[in-house]
Amino acid sequence: MSKFKIGDTAYYANFNPLQEKWTTICPECLGTLKLRVILATEEELSIDCECCDHGGYYGSQGKMQTYEPTPNARQIKITGLEDRGEGNERYYFGGSYLSDSEQLFVTEAEAITCANELAAQYSAKQEESLHRKKKQKKKWSWHVTYHRREMKRSLADAERHAAKLGIALEKAKATK
Image (cartoon, rainbow, N blue to C red):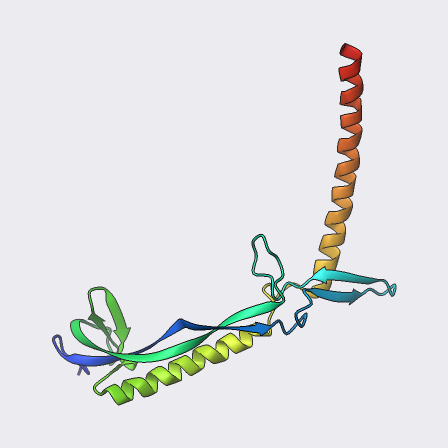
């Protein structure tokens, strides 16, 4: 037996995750943009913080953005119903929106309670993601190794190109 029928009015519990933006200091670099790495040889290196690096041109920012979700319950009219068997239904409303029955309620108060729970779950996930670097499988030491290797390769490339440029300049002078 379906909870709602086509044409019924219900309250849809949801939240808007992008309403309020908060900025917090990066938990890894504490806003310094760099991490200090001490190698086994006691050599100290600074590397860019990957935790607060959002990609793109600017690199590490020293801060992270989080969003405070705003719970809401809106009144909707059921326009379609999909029975998936075993008491599992999907409801269509507002053209193409669909929802499982867990987010649809008869009263607005029930929907607001559910929306608050959904927003709290979202906030908890976002708080957890603040303490995690982007590439979880990569250790911080991997970044040191990678950048040292790339630096050596870039220096070797620069020396090779400088040598080729020198030869090209000699050939250009010889042909004049």
